[in-house]
Length: 294
Image (tube, rainbow, N blue to C red; front, side, top):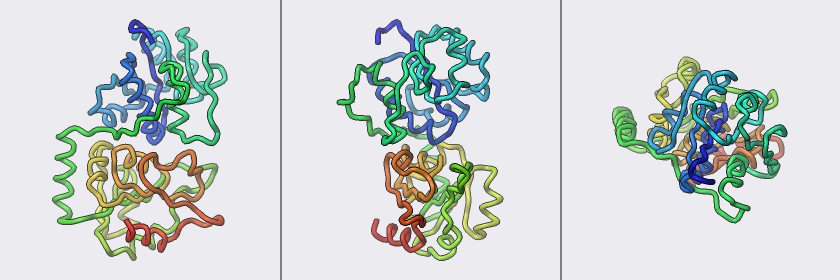
């Protein structure tokens, strides 16, 4: 890609998917491609310690707002991570050539149905990187700045004097009408005594956590601070959720619990997982055995 060209990247709408674009962004940055990412406000916190150009706005789905952004930035091409008409319309209104999975993109990239979603997003950048598949996908973790790390450490020091385990027991959306939350959370929370537990949840889930798991400390922090706390934990146990990918891409020791979603497509890119067998979720004993062996 020539130096005078400018690339706009429309990031995904969901937290987990946004995190899964990180290897793509790393490789584009290393190739010295001039790009600006457009996402929801959380991207400003997630990528605050990187050198990436980020625009985070609650108006990301506003077609006219995005058209103005594309035109004002004098972009010459766009990568569309969401495969939706909503993401496509602003680039069409701006007469901006696009690369994406949608069939109406200027350059359509077909998904590998057996691939991970990280690979799906990374493939969108291959035409610009002149990469036919031989180049390895970057394995970097998202960095944290010193102030965030120190603040996370101060929170931990106020709660624990030794090893601890982070739990993220909630999932905000269904998968094809099915609940993604591990059905054995209450059993685990009441029976596991080897290390103290700490809940990390969104602000709207604090009351639910306190109702369902009384006596277990729970925090709701910014995403970067939550990631800093996760990195200090012995383990982070989660459903298939944004929290799982947050732990994964910031370098925590994550264990994802899968029962109804496609583990091939959305397993933690970094970290481990347990999945269902014969239609049954991994149970308390499976998770306990994993923790004892790691």
